[in-house]
Length: 145
Image 1 (tube, rainbow, N blue to C red):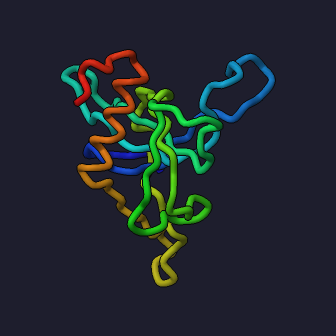
Image 2: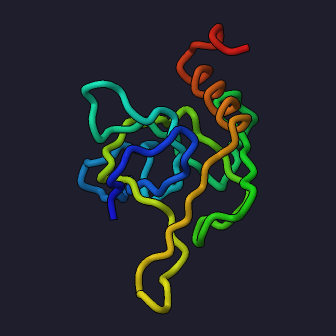
């Protein structure tokens, strides 16, 4: 179910990126499949229902790079994203519609048959680290401490 409210900076959400299909919709290297993302900026004036996000990966970069950083979650997100360690891919930031976003969920409530949504918000320190990586990925290193 798509997000119905403005998320907060640091919220971890699910984003439905398009699946790779050989019909020319995606180029090689573009983000695809359903992934966890972190909200970088939640709302700009006159840009309703859009949010800036950075995706997570469970695969570390092949080489150490300044534009991706390791984030260790305090509690594991729901399956299939349950690994505590993720890599914020700050070089793959996107502006996406709320229609692509939803809260992660951990199965269904036995009594109501409704999804059990899980709210995850990264600490300020992790967000500062991710934002520093975003600046580096955009060539704005001079703006980082």
